[in-house]
Length: 342
Image (cartoon, rainbow, N blue to C red):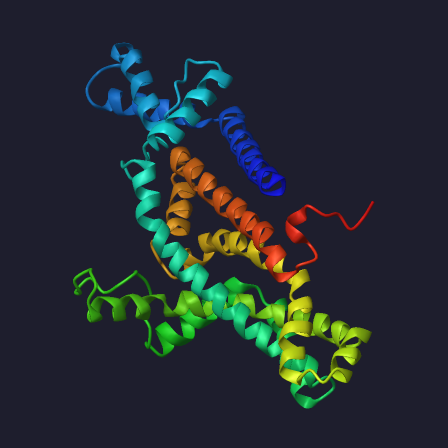
């Protein structure tokens, strides 16, 4: 139980440190979000008919506080405490300067779409790469092994966004099989009906295909782990005991070979969401990554801060799940209560 308590405490600590660092960074850098927003509001007030001398500074401060959820006149530590209190108690991340909507509503509406294309691409890519890696290990030295090794190395050398651009050009412009953007066909009625769901899958096909190709590179690492395990003595003992080959392959070789890449797989979830900023921009897929890119272009700091907290939270949850489930795959860990070193 102490192990789980420690892990929960560490996850909260990491989230706290990352959020604090981002808050201080956003507020300390030249042209902070309060300064830029104040300048915009003053310009709007001047253009609205009043002169610069007639601008109501108290109202400007109040608007800055509403947009950013930060009082610009408070010391940094007090402003940070109030900012975090607003997030934890009221889910108040401020208001987007670019979209004119609450940041929480924007992220909450777009988050399921990012999870949909990211997780499906990661799961499909990882599953296929593990199966191919195991097949390459058992066929070591064959043409199948050599051909897939070359293909996997090529896959790792080509950046995922190049693959995304090529698939977009090939399957959306030259051969218009898939749409060039959007989440679904506007002519359909959102809900649990076949036309809408088919439209969602049709629009998500290319982003998922790109995520699948990006997750394909793990086959080579899994092949190496399998070959390393297959040369160990305990497998000869298992064969002498008469254990069938299928059980040896899955429960002995596969289980031990997946351990080194399991934590990387969980952390890959965060990488997939991070790469979603570029991927969703290429495919014009309006989810969290696309909104983050728009916030960057428009210097929308409240939305950027909210997106940063979202990506950090996903990363921490990924590592948290890896820690909790590692003991299921490797019983030697036993929840971390027993140390193997002294």
